[in-house]
Amino acid sequence: MNTLSKACWIGAAIYASLGMIFGIVMSATGDHSLAPAHGHLNLLGWASLALYGAFYSIFPGAADGWLARAQVLLAHLGVIVLTPGIVFALRGEGEGLAKAGSVIILLSMLLFLLVALMQSRRTPEAA
Ligand code: HEM
Ligand code: HEM
Image (tube, rainbow, N blue to C red; front, side, top):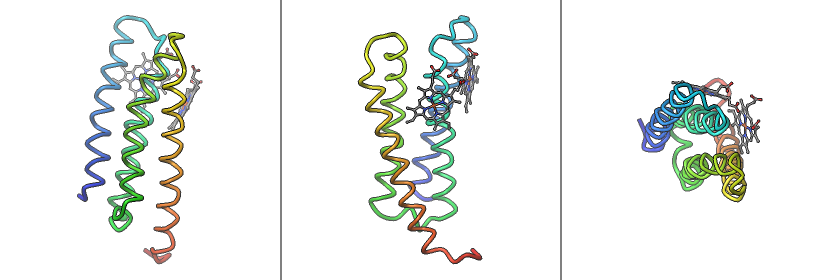
């Protein structure tokens, strides 16, 4: 497994564990008011990062270079900023962190678009 895939999958499993604990606490307390924070921790932290990890495992060549490293770094940073950002926004304690997290997540996806486009030019159609 290349370093970038490892960084995606190990991070994804950590976010999933935290997201599941979050879900279990919500279920146990009956307080679902922070459900969007739980949902996005799981969807951006677990699902999206696991997909990035799969991509970089299937195409290890795409994991080389600063663009791919920046893409994964921003994906992690986005989860770490957006999740508490959604909590603050839902509690009416400010939307700054949520806005910053959203832009970071979008930047990460735009970099992924570039990485995927570059890879599609390198990979023969039959591969
Ligand atoms: C131990 C595992 C989990 C538990 C106990 C759990 C629990 C919950 C609970 C109690 C809610 C609130 C439901 C409501 O108010 O209608 C919820 C919402 C949600 N969960 Fe989970 N969940 C778990 C795992 C996951 C995973 C793995 C994902 C995604 C990959 C996920 C995605 C979502 C989404 C998208 C919502 C809706 C958020 C929203 O309303 O904006 N959950 N979950
Ligand atoms: C920049 C990234 C994102 C932002 C800013 C964002 C924002 C939002 C907002 C504001 C809501 C409504 C929450 C509410 O009703 O209180 C929402 C809901 C939701 N989002 Fe996201 N989202 C993002 C990325 C994603 C991604 C990548 C996924 C899936 C992989 C996703 C899946 C969902 C789902 C399933 C819901 C709940 C829909 C529902 O139950 O009505 N979001 N999102």
